Length: 306
Image 1 (cartoon, rainbow, N blue to C red):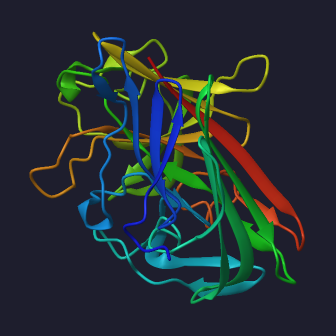
Image 2 (image 1 turned 60 degrees about the vertical axis):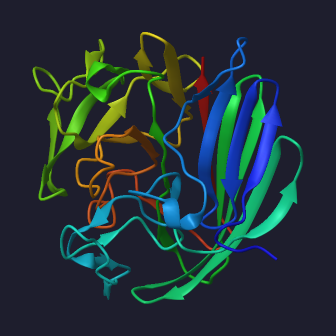
């Protein structure tokens, strides 16, 4: 029987990922190098009690914060639980402490499933599936949300991996993210203004060192290749991690973990793929998906380390 400490190890070639049905979370992802050493490409953990700062969490049905934990949808005002330690807001959905059902496991893949039904402030019903798989392309994470209720539902999805730029201090890691704008935040909540990244510390289009800057920001309007994918990159002198996102994801939160209790601040750099911006329930033009009954919402991102 599964528990919060249940972990499933996936292996493909030199890659290993450790995932758990508890929160459908990503707990570790590392490479074995030709000299026999291991490179942990993500800042991970083992055992539910060891998790810090949202490591590897699945953020459904909304990523980020909802201001005041209140939103209007379908002509009604809804009040969510205020579960944000940094302010009177709702944060990161309902699934981070949910024990999913394990649908399938192979040597290199695992799929989890759960349902959301009539949570306080969210009177909608969803079936959620999250699948992890390893192959030559890297670690693939796919989600599917199905509206199993009888009314339209507001939906967003996000993921919360922290990355390690191989060896070295966070300040020395170089980050490239092809985003043209960012959401202005006040006390970690969007003000409503979307601003150009030009001449700001949020301009990662040509790459920049993390340095001593404290980041907890949401980037938007991602550039894409001809196949519709966008790629963020974190690299240091001894390694490179890329995060490729399909067209479902048009927002990325970056976070240096400065609000995590000591001694774990700035242990990793979060690059969080998100289908919508934070507080999208109050700003539906920021990628909010209105999912009709029996409609599915799907997306995928891929982590590759070398």
